Length: 322
Image 1 (cartoon, rainbow, N blue to C red):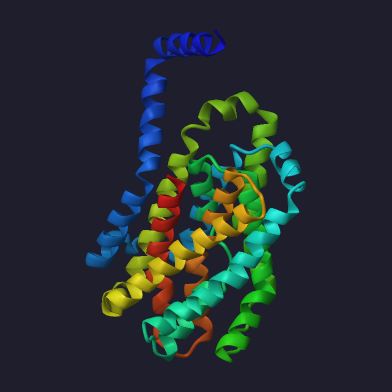
Image 2: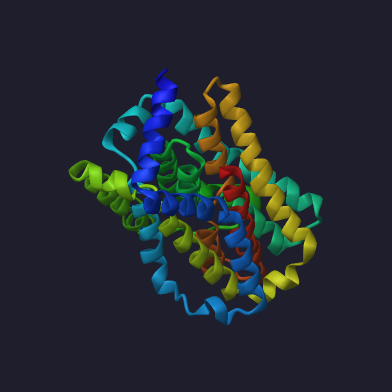
């Protein structure tokens, strides 16, 4: 019947284009091993920092832009229109990002008996916006990419007032956040590359469809370079952090993701939406946390949880994606 015809057609295509299907399967396997590549990059960066220190901070915007463009090229304007029918899912993610995560970070820090600077660093990781790599993980997971992009954008703009507020309330620390800088960065790193990708998809849909299976590879490589570079910059504090902090960061991202999933599911959303929120909640913009810690906290140790978190956040997200 119909399924048989589909299979026959698929077999015909496979015979017609063996090279393309081999490339497609390579692309799928490569992306499914995302967590493995991240773990290898993180270990290499810790053991031998020069393996990634050549990736300068000035490259970060371009790498994040490439990552977001690789996501945008698979998305259409209709995908975004569809998302506006579900503002509830975006709201749940916002509450998970700035409600569940900071509280979870504080409790985990207390649980491991973290001292001032490490506790502040963990709470800072909990109270920053969702990370751009979440959109890539959502793409690999077959989740709702347009919804993921909207969630990242809402939490990124939200961090202008939420992150300083949470740091003030929980830590008593005043974290001045450069509001205009965040808006400009959000436009450069998230919105512009996404809209370029969506624009290209609108103008040349058949071209975009043919390259779509391979675009996540670009995103994976960009993310691996970003994670490796972030880790290499503070290899010593990561080694010095010890096991309790490693486990604390892993727990923060893993349980945060699971709680995000449960909250969305409990509100009656489908598996695809719930999974998108889970990835979005678990994955924080740890590199941004590292930047804030470096700029606004006197103690060097405040930035250590962000550095450790970069690795566990990316690994947790890519595991949730598969």
